[in-house]
Length: 140
Image 1 (tube, rainbow, N blue to C red):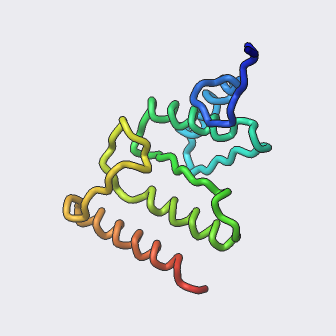
Image 2 (cartoon, rainbow, N blue to C red):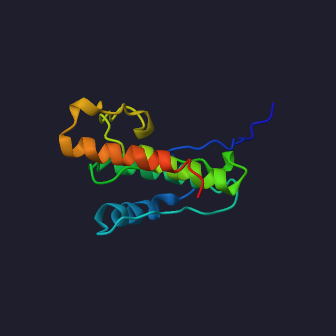
């Protein structure tokens, strides 16, 4: 029997690729930034991008604040550029909906707060958000 270890290409939250030096710096930029922020992680297939992002999401949850949310989006599922952008925008808009915080589940599985449980101001904001979502499907 061969005693060699083989690694699969599955994302992990165990840092076997040496991201420990970068994660604290990224968390600081995200949590202390004074303007809205989007961070992209780029690299070749199999270089640990998804693992790094999962570790960052875990680190951010430990410092959770209602002022930021992570949005998980899998771009490779979409073949056409138009479909990619539409799906991305819809994913971001969906993440802005008020949700019941459940630290035991990923943010994308948090339940939406029913409209009647929101303040009038929040209800108006959610209604605008939903109109914006609908407009993404209209031809330009």
